[in-house]
Image (cartoon, rainbow, N blue to C red):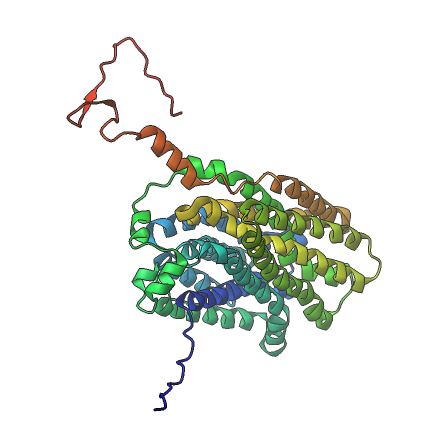
Length: 467
């Protein structure tokens, strides 16, 4: 008798990959909302008669609340869950982007960029926290790499996209359209995302096991006190490296169109192409950095090596191509060097965002906020200092040379990052030392079980050994 065969059912798309896709879209939209001001900057400057310093203040207004909201947003996501927190933040940045289309003065521009910084400030730490319970350790580098590559893709398509809208209706229409797109993403996020696999009806037990999620992890984390001292001790060096990386990135995000127009002589049509090229190189770098780091980890089992080798290679390569760019006489070669430099710079980005997951675990939201505070502080300083140095020297060479120096410092600092020194390990050691025997806290264990308090002489000073 011939056995009956049934057609195979189509392979099920894993829930975590759907969520990853939604997050990629968020990174894409947020970077368009962030970078569009730089593309429209020359037009806004001409319309409102702004100086280089005033334009630099408009650029940097985003960075002040952005820096503050890093830790605040990350901490809120640890305590209240990324779904609620990211929903509120996305409404704020979407409304601010939309309202920028009606700005009529420098003051209003600064205020709306400030509001945008509040909305986007906690977004990336919150997304990092979301990955804690949705991404296995061996996929975290890829997840951070692909999301940030979409961010750079957003930055890359912004020049042609915004300039196309500008050609039809003006720079204000670009902000109105992008504001609507941001608010539409909020609706999609509400429909798809849950804080953990156990809250998602679509996620199977098999996928939950692949992720490594244990039932109740999400709720337990909400009720755990944040170990601020441990987080600062483990994350300060990562934050400093992120500052050095962020300084250079802010140069690309804010001053690249003006540099290519004013220093290299490209016209408006050429700007659309040559501004996009370095950012497209960053798209490749972001994805490659995360994938390479994960593969090195799988091949060697050495997490610190897998993270640090990518950091050092990326910062070193960016520095190696930035220096000849400064002295390049040919504008096209300058764009080539800029693109190569940005490619290597972005190799480091997914690793930087994976380190909070590696080091802080369930506190990744707060840790990610701490790390990206370095990027936020760089955003406060970089655009304004860059604009000031341009006015003082009449050249872009000096600020680019200073940026190269910071890359060199960050490279050296990256060598000392150690992923084996985690917050979970610190807590485990303290628990082992302080609660070695049940019933022995604050006294001596007796046969019956409860602790007997120790008598202390009134003149003896207690030993504060835990400080």
